[in-house]
Each structure stands twice: as C-alpha cells, then as structure tokens.
Length: 324
Image 1 (cartoon, rainbow, N blue to C red):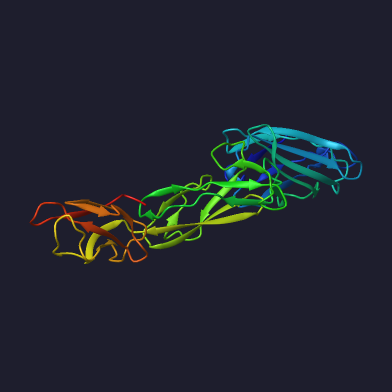
Image 2: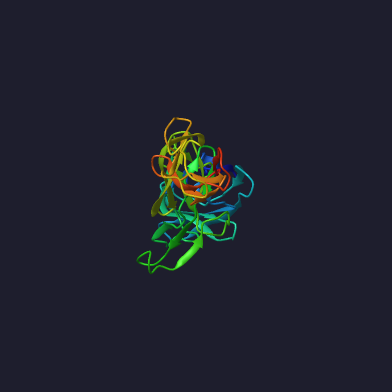
C-alpha cells in the first residue's frame, strides 16, 4: 500500500491518488510496474470555501469493464491534509479509469461533486483536473434577492443585509429555500462589495457591511455558488462633524408667535460637504414644528420656531442623532 495525501483548506488543494499495479505479465511490482495518477479539484465557484467539508469520497471505475476498483471515503474534519493509501488493481498500464470525486458536508450530504473524469493509470504526477460544482442545499435555486434596505452609514458604522433565494421560474412566484445566515445547513450566499473604498464585507459568509472612508453609494453583491446574484446599495458618508445655520439665525419676534423665517440647519461631514439623511432634533425655548427633521442631499433641514412666553433672548439647539 502506498501513501498519498489529500489536501483541503480553503482551496481544497491537490488530491493525489497513487495506483499500485497488480501482478500481471510484465506489469507487476516485481517488474517495477507501479503506475500513478493525480487529480486536482477545481471549483466552479470562487466562493466554495463558504461550505464546510467533513469528508471526501473517491470512486474509480475501470472504463473497459465497468468494475469499481475503489470507493473510498476519507475524513477531512478539522484537518488541512491527511495521508491515505489506495491500492487499485491494474492489468495494463494504459488502462483508463473513470473517477468521481464528491465532498461531504456537515449534514452528511454531498455538497460538491465532480466526474466522471477519464484518468490514465500511467498519468504520472501531472494532475488531471476534476471540475467540482455545488450540489448542496439550494443548488437548484435560480435567483437570490437582497430583501433589506440599508440606512445611510457613517464611516465606521455597519449594517447587515439579508437575502432570500428562490427555486421558482421568477422571484415573485418562487418558493423560498433559506435565509442567509450563519446556519451551515442553509443556502450558502457569498457577500462582497464592488466599491471597497466606500464599504467592505469583512466576512463573505455574512451580509455585514462596514462603512469605509469614501463618500458615495456602495454596491453590495449577494451571490449563490451556482451563479445567480443580486445587488443592494448603501450610502456611505463621513460622520457629522459640524453644523451651521444658513438661514434664520438672530431673528426678532413676538413672544409665543412663530418667527417669520424658518430655522435652517446644515449638517456637514469631515470633508466639509453636507451629510444626507442625518436626523436632527430641535429643542430650546418655545416650540418647534417639526421638532425632528431629516437632512436633504445638501445636508439641510428646517423647522418653524414659535418663541416662548418670556421676553428677552431665547435659544434653540439642534442635536444630531448618531445615524438615520
């Protein structure tokens, strides 16, 4: 029996099978008759590492006879490589094997499969590529939809998107398969940012988005391992750092009556530009209508100030919430 090695980890590395030829005319081990071949899994999705794998199953069938010469399962749980030994009878060094490779997940189900691939017994150390496609929960889904709307994010804050996958002909009539979550038995959804200077996704298994330093809309993609994808948007801005009063300051009026001009407050970020969707709360002497406002695209919001009953100088304050 000859040792070989299966390597896993994120890319699941190279799987090598060493085939020891059986005794036969001029092909037995006593004549130096040892052939070997190698197979290298290649995943159709670059996000295959999202799916935990606990075991690998390798099946090799002799093409000429249909005889299954090996059907072996190897435990991969918690390991990035293991040593295995396979002995496969070979009569002719030119034989062709049909090789299937499947990877098994946490629920003891097949999560990736590849083959049959034709592999010559005398293939040597050059690996034969085995394309692997996802076949676990949600593999039949034909669409994914981002179902949450992100608020405006200030630099350093975060938000978690959610998505739903469907297996119907359209999103509207499709049947929900699973929510995206940390549930290893759910449909795997890979999250990424197309605008990493504005927002990043620290863990592509989770839809959590972290606002970066550049202002603007960031496109956040939810993608299935089988290809369908959808995109959500999040507006990223610097946190409010200053407030000015473009209109309405230093007015005079009669007590208990409204001032002639509205009070306009502009909220600015650290880049000196207006901050959109900031929540501003007004308080002070008298009353304000409304007492809460949301800034527009220029960072402005306004209120009508009705003075209090006491004559003399009166004041108003505008306080910005942390986030809209």
